Each structure stands twice: as structure tokens, then as C-alpha cells.
Length: 213
Ligand code: GDP
Image 1 (cartoon, helix red, strand yellow):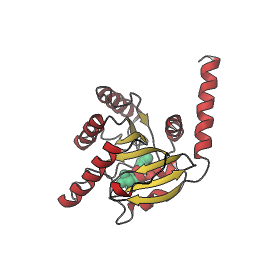
Image 2: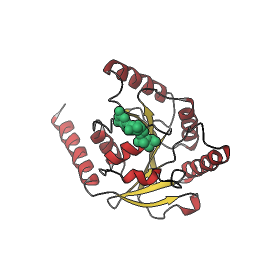
Image 3: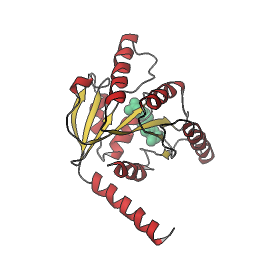
Image 4: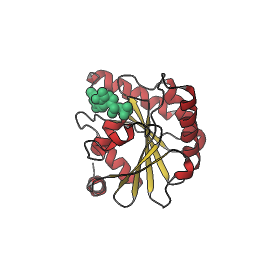
């Protein structure tokens, strides 16, 4: 690494530390796009299948023990939940998808919300697409990827629960996920591996977000 690269890497770390130093606060839950907040904050949304580890990762990212539990309280699981980070960023917790037992009418309702949000939100700079490192990309993830490609919304793969697979298996799923995402026009080529349980990859995730602000 050259001295210039080193300086750039240090600056990226400092930007991330600065951005996430203040506690994040829950702002509102949005059930219909007509209720989306005004303003020009950058938005980074988190999407993934139910149980992928989204709440745990958001808690680790936002440095709060139970912040994202708000999103899992009854009534809020089908909303876009907005968290304010500093004065320039909203982290948006999207409803979990792929929950086989959910009634069809509910699935249709939140599918519509996700579609409307992804298609029409210029503040949305990237969707972090969470993928369980034990399972890799699933068909319901591919549906969202197709939607994001069509809407031309940038998205980045983030493996969760990276403490679970053996290291060889983790490298394999990381390589497979990157290879699949590289074929998608709107996907960012770098996949991050994280573990909320062990605090792995959280700094890299913060840096990726800070870069977009
Ligand atoms: P959500 O439904 O996507 O919000 O998922 P949760 O954050 O509620 O997590 C689902 C399950 O996965 C819970 O039992 C968590 O304890 C577990 N989990 C979440 N993150 C991790 C992780 O980094 N490592 C491990 N081993 N388990 C995790």
C-alpha cells in the first residue's frame, strides 16, 4: 500500500468513526410511501429474508443494544423503519421477506411498499442486501435483486452470521455470492462478511456507508 493509499484508508476510517459516534435514534415507521419523510438526508436501506440477522446487525452497526427491536415490535415489522444517524443519514430497516407462513394479503401489502419505495426514492443511495452466510443467495433474494436491477438502485451483498460457517465454507459462500452478484447490473462488486455476534465486519460496513454520505 502506498503512502497515499494509506492516507485515504485512514481518512475513510475517520469518516466512519465520526458518522457513527453519535447515538442513532428511531424516527418513524412508514407503512405507505405517502408517509416517507421529507428532506435531503442520504438513505441506506437494509433488506433481507426474515431471520437473516438484520436486527442484530443494525444494533451492532448503530451501536445500540435494542434499537432495531423497535422494528420487530408487532405492527412495525411491515413498515420501513427510519433511524437517524448524525444529521446527514437515515438508515432504513426494510420489512423482512421470504417468510413462508405469512398470509398472502400481508405479503402483497409489503411487497407493494417495497416496490414503491425502491422505484421512487432518489435519496436512497444503496440497499445492503443481507444474506445468511450458512445459506447463500436464495430465490426470494433473487426476486429483490431483479427488482433492484430494474429500478437501477445500487445494492451490496452483506453476509451475516459469519461466525457460523467453518472458514473454508465462509470463503466459498463469499466467492459464490460475489460471482453471482457480479452478473447483476446494479450490484456493487464487493461483498462484506459480518457477524453481529462477534463484531466482525462492522467497521467495514460503517466505512462503506460513510463513503456514500
Ligand atoms: P432478523 O429477523 O433478520 O431481524 O434476525 P435477528 O437479528 O432477530 O436474528 C435472527 C436469529 O439469528 C437470532 O436467533 C439471532 O440470535 C441470530 N443471529 C443474528 N446475528 C447473528 C450472528 O452474527 N451470529 C450468530 N451466530 N447468530 C446470529
